[in-house]
Length: 203
Picture 1 (cartoon, rainbow, N blue to C red):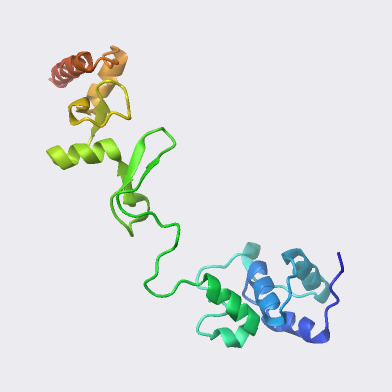
Picture 2 (picture 1 turned 180 degrees about the horizontal axis):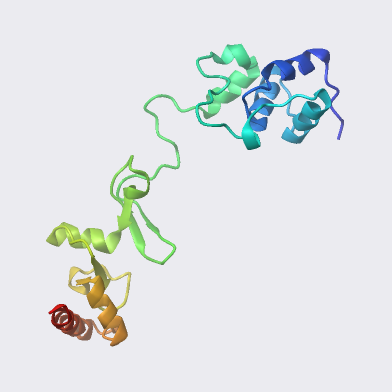
C-alpha cells in the first residue's frame, strides 16, 4: 500500500480543523475536502506528527459541544464529489428508509415469540407480542401485572380460545404445581385452580 505524502495545504487543513471534532469526523472531512480515502489511523498518525489534538475527552463529544459543521453548507467543508456521495445516502424530507417495515409486519423475538408492528415513531414500543395484541383486540386492555399464556403451550397457536390471561402470581403457582400442560382444557382448569389459590393466599 502506497503511503500518502501529506502536502503543506493538507497539514494546514488538519491544524485548522482538528479542534472539537472526533477522529472519525476529521477523517471524513479531510477525505471529502481532498477527494481521498485515507484511514482514521493515517490521520491519527499525522496528528501525532503535527503534535495537534482535538481537545475532546476520550475522543468523544462532551456535553454542550457543537459539531464542526453545524450551520454550515456542504460547500463550506466538502468537495463536489463528497457532496454528490452524501446526496446518495441522505434522505429527502418525508421519505422513508428502504428497510423500514410497514405496520402489521411480524418478526420473532429472542425468546421465540412472534412480534407484530403496531405503530411507527415510538422506537421499542412500535412492536408488541402478537398473542397479547390479539387478546386485547378481542377483549380489551390487559390489567397491569397480568400476562397472556398459550393454553396448549404452542406459541404459534393464536386461536383466541387458546389464549388465557393470568396474573404473575397465578403463573408462579401454575409453574410450581405444573399446571401448565400441552392439553388446552387441563391448562384452563389449572388456571382456575391457581386463581383460587392466589385469592386464598391474599386473604
